[in-house]
Image (cartoon, rainbow, N blue to C red; front, side, top):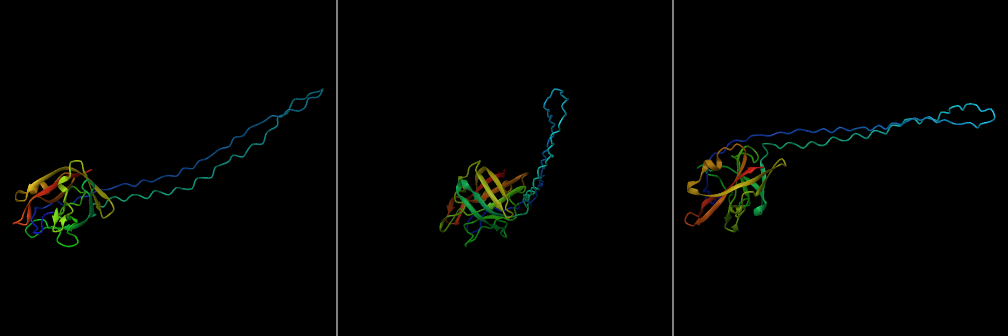
Length: 232
């Protein structure tokens, strides 16, 4: 997100909140087939002194009943998403991002930590002081724009546009899907903390990385690029 020196926006984030779900039960039905009875009349040969014919009853078929259908198994209920399940992966098809998530906190001066040199440097990171993605409030995911070896995970973050989709997979197997509302750049020395980290009335997402010119004397980019998105 920001640079190796850890310079970046800081601020507090709201606490998390939670959802629920129902179970559907299926019933099996039994089909019954009934039989019918009938009466037939026979006729005797006539002779010179005919007699009235006598009715002859036909044999009545025994009503039959179809074998009941075997009971159908009840469908396995789909577990409700766990509102506390932490995020584990972020996918952004429009810019080719598909990254495992690491977790970061705050530095002693109140700025956001950033992934340090090592195997996690080029992974996106969830700020664990923000809501779990899908809870009410602004969940925050950061990532580097570049590094010594070239472009990093959020190199193309500024190319996102309103309507682009972002999927955040959670540890319980559920996925929170977000749609981009806007992409904005802010000078690091005038970062709008309340706008980015302030409370919201719905589940939202903030993706943050560095942007703007690279200040070689400070060894840091002068801006932050911030993506604002809400859950769909």
